[in-house]
Length: 142
Image 1 (spheres, rainbow, N blue to C red):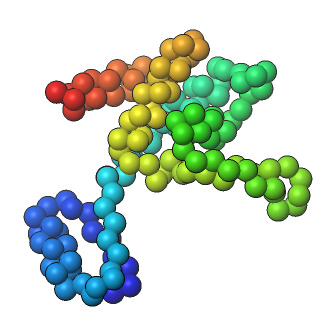
Image 2 (cartoon, helix red, strand yellow):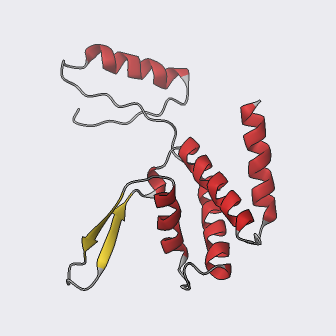
């Protein structure tokens, strides 16, 4: 087996993982990660990015939701590097994809965006997304 991925969704999968660990050759690499961001978190992210892109200018410029995503990821300390474009005209941002964020990292991003939006007068097109997320965050913390 060169590569495998298990998501610990039930006890049967947990048992399979233990079996694989027990029979894995020395030198095998293991990696444990938090669960990836959810589809509902992703939907909320893009709704919020779209609202921000429609309503706000950044230093006199309007940006598409994709650009705002990079701005917010960078603001949260996600690695970003700039590389020359292949044609040599301009630069390209290289960095973390939001699809690689864990659920907790995505929660941090959405909370930061919510606070930033409040400070910058953003009117959310679907305020129930913001309220529902705040309620689920409070339930998870309790």
